[in-house]
Length: 475
Image (cartoon, rainbow, N blue to C red; front, side):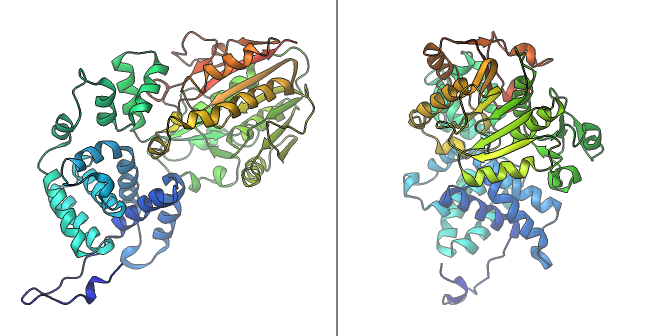
């Protein structure tokens, strides 16, 4: 990138150095990492914020700076589809011909104009200054021209202009209004079973900032301890859940730093609790988490197993993720073992375990609140890649559990191809197993459907869209 301060000055027009805005520069850097390295914002942003807090002088962040940077990054990513449609209406070329760094600056500016309460003049001038710093004066003029066009209307007016009418094309209308790829809208609609109100509520919930939810790991921490924290309130459904209602900082909590508690969505907690509560025929001594990385469910399962004197084996194919599992389980009060192993080619003998959890790799369409960029990376063809693995892992789970034992098949995706289709296909070829009703094992949780499996929803339960099927091996 050329240094604008070295450019020759025009006669009669003194050069003004661009004003650096640390908050917007950091937000731009985070978006570039997401775009260039396929990084996830929830992994990129925390170290950038930590570094900014450690600086001295005018670039040092305070709480308001961190909150604004977080809102700019996540807000821009969540509404990317809508903002792309608006920008496309304001430029004279296809968006694919706009340089990605320029598009990131434009998207940040559009979010400030249409998605925040920042005054129009401040949103435009701050974005143009950012462009001067990171792109140079020439492209800053382009940014200025586009944002001034955007500023002529509010979000509702722009949506009325760029989104097709619902009656003409319902899926494309919802895709633009709620900033989801069309195929994702279609898949989620199928999973919900139709109806406009439900899909609108779900898509809107995907664009809401989720609360931070903690889990008090049994035998190591209590919810009472966590509730002593500022802005902490009880979870809705899990007896071990505590919510940080105002988006508190988990890393500042002693129990989290010490591993006695963790950050874990309540839907994930419910999956582990339901498997642990499922009635068994016979002993209850050996549990398996067959896809344990990064370790959240394994840590809760290990703590629950310890209360009964049972052992948890946590298996994870990727060695670095197995290391994360070991870190999450360190200090567990009962016996456990962590291994790096391929769940489709297990090193353990068939029929070894009393309870098995198989939380399989999936598209992650149930966690779009937390990873908004995932919606733009996934493609329909990704389902074809996951399908054989999901079926193989469920078959392994059924072979690994003893007769009378229970398997939990879980995904963080509500897509029917990753949930009921997988369970149905595998059980057709495994007649010695029966679905059991999971709904009574989630006491107090409403709207769990017709069963016997369970699908949680962000707009109904305030959780990620976790799916769970419980299966008992009968022979």
